[in-house]
Length: 386
Image (cartoon, rainbow, N blue to C red; front, side):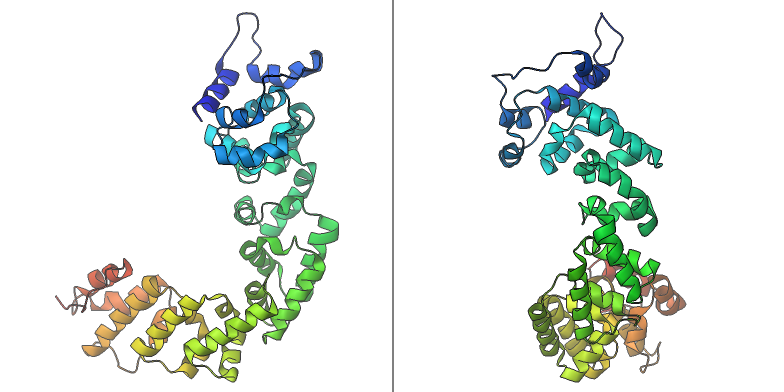
């Protein structure tokens, strides 16, 4: 890594007494006038990846096979200098090369410069381009990423949303728009999912719209199979819950739900239809939520089946602290004992504080402190009055 930092500094900051041209400029345009670079018999790609690019030896070993044809440091040197000039740190450059070793083989003049110019023409700043390259380095060497960018910016609504999606779907920008992405978006619209819903679905499952259309249609069939019809308000969440899962996996999830929450077939059907995301709960999560709701709070299985969204809430960060606070208020006659715990669980934090904590700052001055401690995981044995 230190050598990469020295390399970048040397390329970007050093000057010669013979010229005022920057090292980057010489790397970018010197090749046009210079003869072809001869192979360097002393050049070895693995040491270069470690010592100059900053990769670990394990990364270099894995990456070297993809760039083994490089016989000279000339082209990769030019790429490293270009990335540094773009604003990538030495750590960013090392990460980019590890993700996409073929980046070192790209032509700066014929590929990288035009593509960066294309991103700039679409309104991206240098820092936004650098961030995009750091996240998905292959996009800077593929012209399709530039041409597809306007569509994705419109689909996701903003650059920030696109970046969020690319964190989990790094090849999204280079997918075939006409044959894959647009048909998938049109199909989702046919299923009753509006533009905002499609954007939300794409953020939750970024690789879905880049998947073969026949596979997306199969996912929709599976979503219907679990009891959520197309056109319903929950179909988007049903599609999100079953995406890239087999019928067998879903069947196992249903059995886990039935066992954990003591549900009948009808009750698990109600729960999934009302909130399909329960299908994404792990077996351990189901068990811990079951112990809390049934054993600790004392809720009936049928009650939970009709209010399944609460099962997906954070146990330690939300459910348990609120339960302790409301239980304290009930036991001390400050709140009607028939008041629903569910109502307190689903409220936004600001509303919960306004309804259950702030009104009692005189009668129970330690309530706010104890609740805050519980939210941090420091659950007291008993909430206190003073």
